[in-house]
Length: 349
Image (cartoon, rainbow, N blue to C red):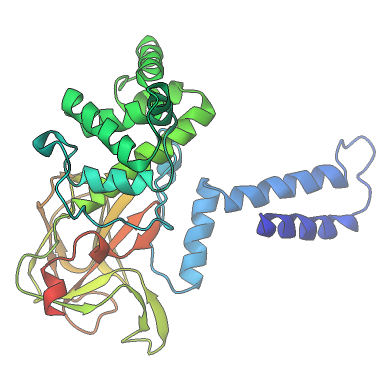
């Protein structure tokens, strides 16, 4: 907010000297100021213009990122998962009570992590109505009961965020409006009241994104080593410190590369720095990218399965040797792949 206030103050200073608008023009300094403030907010918000600005800022800072597709900002209006400040909880040290009837992994760890950030409205209300204390333990037990009844983790999340009545009402409106996916959350959530939808998005979206990432398959199966970690490092070519937005897996050229998770191939490209690369969208703001490839074996629009062969590793682009650069982005922000799946590379680094 301080950044926005500072921008508004500067814009006000810039418009203070402007001469009075010509008579009859309908515009003045105040109108110009409001227009400029609107543009400023557009740049810093999640809009196509904001996405381009963010991409440009990352490029200026030396952080590699793919250009955001403009259509993604208008798809279904969902808030993309934001896990930038989320501390992933470790798996439970003891098996959950209820045995096979309990919410399974990776959903269990994803739900426990999301509950640590806040209790969804409907779940909290259900616990209070029963006279049960509202905490992570009782909430998880409630979700275990829902899992036994429905056997579908997404339905469990939706009921926890909305409750059965509100969920069914939104579905009914979606059916009446001939929505193509009236019984899927991505379809009926637009028929929820705005504030309710945004709160539900945070719980449902974050949890599904976490579960998606926690279920990643490692992209390389052949013997290899982790040659460079995620984070700040001395760049091997530029010889200066730079943020490394993924991990490097040293492997021979022509080694098969596999999709970490099911999804849609949204980018197949080539650049001077990244070489040949593939980007897969796994939904709910989760994307993986595979860089420095010898060859891509998929096309844009290909629907891949988890573990499907998508490319051959190589040494293209800005590279000092054959390797695969593997990047994970959640909500547009790069995160360390090793926190979701240590992979065989961790033992050989």
